[in-house]
Picture 1 (tube, rainbow, N blue to C red):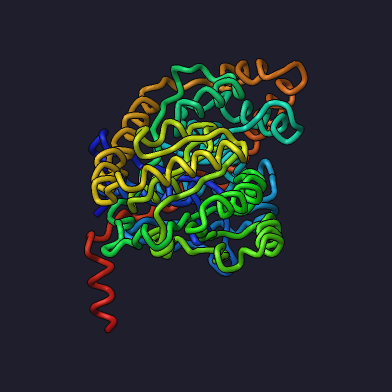
Picture 2 (spheres, rainbow, N blue to C red; picture 1 turned 45 degrees about the vertical axis):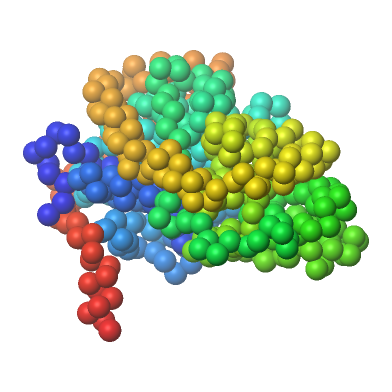
Length: 448
């Protein structure tokens, strides 16, 4: 059987986000690994996300992790179209069927997350929100997103950020009291990212690896200027670039212009299962992001024994000790100098020692235990009536506050209508079960 209802220390958690497997990314990995570790601690964990292609309905993953792929199709950038109230009947049914006690939303630009948290608070559930990104304050997109975040976090029980820089950014954008925001960094599965047994020799070539989505935010325009200059200064350096995106054409044009086809290898999109096989081909990992709350790719590279060169932006300076990373300003000349410095540091780098240190510094089990404390704090918070909650929304702006209150009142009436139409007692609760840790291996053996 699964989580024990008689044990108040065990939680029943619903993870909600637009971003989950089979899509790959930092948020998707975070939700998956955190869920697996929480299951190992004895909690019940269920994930709710939108449908991916033909993947719709209920699926089970490793360890018995249950995933609801709600039949909502992505609208743009893997986000569902905002319906405000369309998700309420489905989320209500999941919450009741699974007897959820805590709803945990991920990522600020996930409309699925915002709607699910809003409906959960309407129904009186405790909600926790994790912010994985940094946003500005000046451009139109950031202003809009900050107002939406302010609406969601006005009534959130507790919040989590992945770095101290991210916490400052979230508090400034949302107006959330700092004491309600916890900092819990990401982690890396060090058993999956191990150094190469036979590492490429530095005397022959120095290989610099770049694995990133090739978009503006990841600093591809910087790479276009940095790579030719590094190749000019260091004849024994070559680059491996993994990833895809709108800016890939700029890198290919640069390679053609400077005749670097034999020194810049373009791999295209790299599945997460193959990231290690690419990383262990290199000596240095290059991250050129223009904004980053916390870069999991840096952890994966360091766990594989690569020295990291990165732009000094967002929460990146918090990720690794000084002797494992060379930081540079997001400027081509400074990045070229940082790469030159990293090349001179390479003889002192011991990949296995770096891997061992990463194993001690970052562990998903530690992340799960710290998140467990946040859940405990959330459940101890007092329940608030509708009028008390509306007063928070009124503080969100002269016009926005009144609009937010109207949205919440209509949502509350819709929920009451659903309670009359289909009472909670008429919704069947599902039995709990968990799979043993070696279940996947047993299934494979039985099918052979």
